[in-house]
Image (cartoon, rainbow, N blue to C red; front, side, top):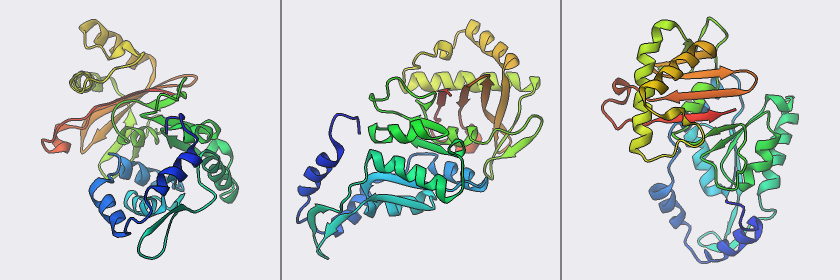
Length: 285
C-alpha cells in the first residue's frame, strides 16, 4: 500500500467485488500468480539458524499467507480471512481487519511472548501499513519501499533481492567466519581480496546499468577508474567483511561507525550455472 487509501475501507470495497467467486479460483491465483521474493528462503533459513523466530504479518488473505509462510519458511503467519459459504466467497472479510495497527501489535506481542527487548527485533516491509512496525523495531528495513517512505529508514534495500539482506544479517566477530547457509560464508576482509572484489564491484555496476536502476544518492556506483580507487581506499578505512559462495567471492559488507552499512553482492557465475546475473547494491543503516 502506498498510503493513499484508507486500508480497511478499501479492502472491504474490493472484497465485495469477489462475491460469488468459486473457492477453486483462489487455488488458480496462487498457482499462477504468487511467487516468493528471490532470496526469501535464504533469509528465513539464515535467521532461524541463528535463533530468530520468523513471523509473517500481511494485510493480504490467509488463503495465501498460510501457503507463502510454509513455502518461505516462516514459523507463524497472520492475515485477513475471506468469508465463504463452503463453495463461494461471500464478498465479506472477517473483522477486525489486519492493517497498520495490527502489524505493530504483532511485533509488540511477540516481544512479550518471547521475553525479548524491542532492540532484539527486526522488521522488514515495503508499504504504508509497515511504517509503524518498521519504526518500532530494533532494526527496521525498507525493502523496495513505496514512495510513502520519505524519508526512508536508515536501513534499506533499493536494488536486488533478499539474499543480500541474508548475508548482512550475520556479520561475524572480528577474525572469525560465519556460515550463513550451506553455500554462503562471511568472513573478515583481507588485503588479498581487493582485486577480486574490485571485479565484483565492476560487475555490480554493470548490472545496475543493464537493469536501468537508479543508484540513488550514493554516487559511488560510478564505474570510472578514479571512483574504483576511492572505493578501494574505503575498504581500508571501514570495517569490512567479504561474502563467499561455494568458494568464490561474491560481495562485501562495509561498516562505518556509528550507523552506516554499505553492501554489494553479485552471485558468482559458477554459483548461478550460467543464469542471468543479478546485482544487489544497498546503502543504508
